[in-house]
Image (cartoon, rainbow, N blue to C red; front, side):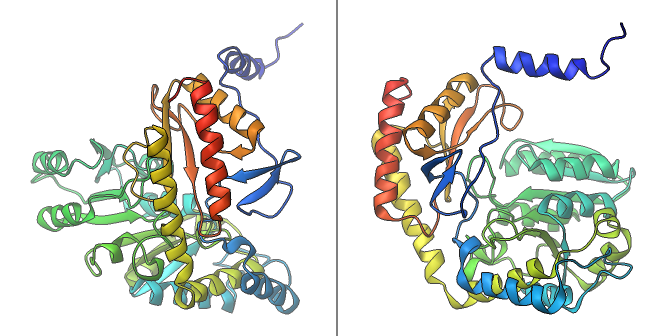
Length: 394
């Protein structure tokens, strides 16, 4: 009897079960709201990237429905053949104005925006200088480019400069790349120092602003605006899937850079473009950012209150400076148990272990939104405190 060729995958899953690291997908059975229904339970939702509550904003829903009526449910092609609709161009123009750049291009996801851009602009003759905690999409783009990769310790500007000094005189292009807000720790990149290094050593400066878009800067313009560095960052990547409330990613840069990506970015070339409803929703979302700044104010009010509550309870929240607030646990099996017991008690806060975070640094990642109520956050803190004490985490 021949062995099953995929048995090794079943064996690996069994190892995860034995180590108490196996996790099932939670199934959302309602709208993505601060209190939502997962797996048949109403729970306080601290696991969503829906920072501003735009997934259910009436204006966005209305625009999506109108677009379906006018344009249908799909574009029917990739952008470079028959799939570029006027809605896509309108969205790209709106993003460029919002981010104060010459031009932008929309990708099907934030992941493909990062990976497709790095892969397109570099070759094996080039070198990439990357923060050690950069997102997986940046890492994959670096690998696909076949450029040499140099990694510097997290947010260590001095160590980054040491790497750049060692590369002095080397032929080829240099790309210095960082997240704006780091998705697992919630801390903000030291962008002014990195930008200064990029200028000093002749690097292309690139930032992934997925978790800063809609969160930092004026009306949510991101890390570049937060630090007042307009015109000094060559490539900005953002997402339409988090604070914007829909789906997709985008790249902002010079007009020629964007035109080049039209011709060479593989995800753009080989993936069907956004459905009209998604493009229209995203256009409406940027209008909401401009016209309803109170949403971002509410997000930060809730963030400050929740962080203070966690610290009073005795939780270690790591380096967080944003609505992403990890509750550090350490052991992955314990973090997963913590998450399961929180869920049973009425709070959905996802546990994260290796390979998402390094071994020994497992955690619960909490994210508050603009639309959480005071009562919801107070109750969530009560549950976190109760379960955390029971498990000996605090």
